[in-house]
Length: 505
Image 1 (cartoon, rainbow, N blue to C red):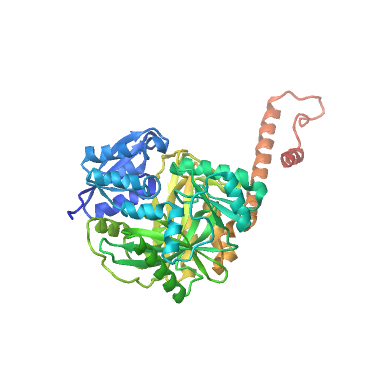
Image 2 (spheres, helix red, strand yellow):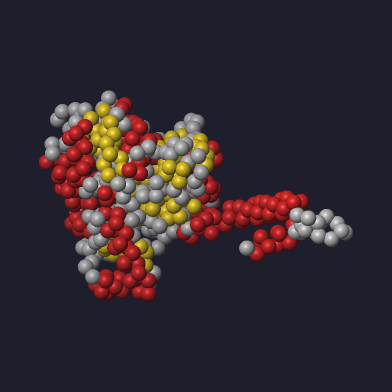
């Protein structure tokens, strides 16, 4: 196959920039696409060419296949890299690229069909002899059928979107009383995120670990795994902190899970980078969860411990090159990634879009920040609020944790609220430091992770409010005529009274 000369990156933000950087390393020209909300975005400035594709909502811009392909033709791009999200797991888009004579840097449509829809993937894995979490193998048609099945396997259960991942369209349901509202919200979110409201049910495993295996395959059937990533630090089923190696895996369990992941990829003739996700129970039994047929958000930690560039490998696989290695390299050291979000943890993680007035990014030995923002950039409210991925490497897990905490302490973002303090709290928590944390860790420790910080901030806010009010009233009293001839303080308000009033608020 001919070498790729120009890549259109059908995405935005940090992942678009990350792909463009590797393309430039390889001497490949790049093309950006952008919505109205992203006219001044960093990925637009990074690319060699940039094209407008529509209004801010992704369904009117980044998800419009015809417009993306039109830009590819206009720009002369001979390949498209989808990043993650948006069109990255859309088999019809892969077929449209093939029809247009444009190389899609990712798996073939048939593999995406087999693994992209989660219920079909479960059925395929059962046929291949891969252990799966108990649940349905087809989307459930009606709420009545769903209720009946949920009662049959017993609560708690998980409602999950069949057409996508990333925590979207996913709800944990504790009992029948919560079922109907969870069903409606899961289907609504699945439709808005993936254009597909199909939902299926899985049994919820108590205190599981979420461990995924990175796989890679070329066009000749050569398939390997590149070790695991521990992704159990999650909130609302979205990963917040990832690390590798997993602190709970033995070399024997790693090898066994890697073997199963390779088997899963080979079963669907997979090509390129993919991730097979598992749940590991308290007895260290593991079950297939799903396969993400794309590059993962957390791929930098794998790159840290293997020394590989997964995007470069994707491009070379798309060009028809054979895998440069035929077994998993032993992990070197330890890597941790934290996701920096424009959100307010103290307000139920409410997104915090707005203008970034000042930005200082951490640096130093073995620190990497994949970011899509800059000082002066306005974070839009139309997309995922993640603004960067901070990852570090250390010779040991302890060193990696210390380095990640140091890097977080250097990170400064002014103008919007972020989760930087919250991330530091996670890395400092004894349960995380101990290594045996499960997917309920952040939910279970939510009050503790926020409580001390909130109490300190509340006290500071109270004192600041009291001081401000006192100074205001002092100034006001000086401009008022004195009431009565006995003194000049009768028009002033007691600061103690102000403090009491502020506390009552």
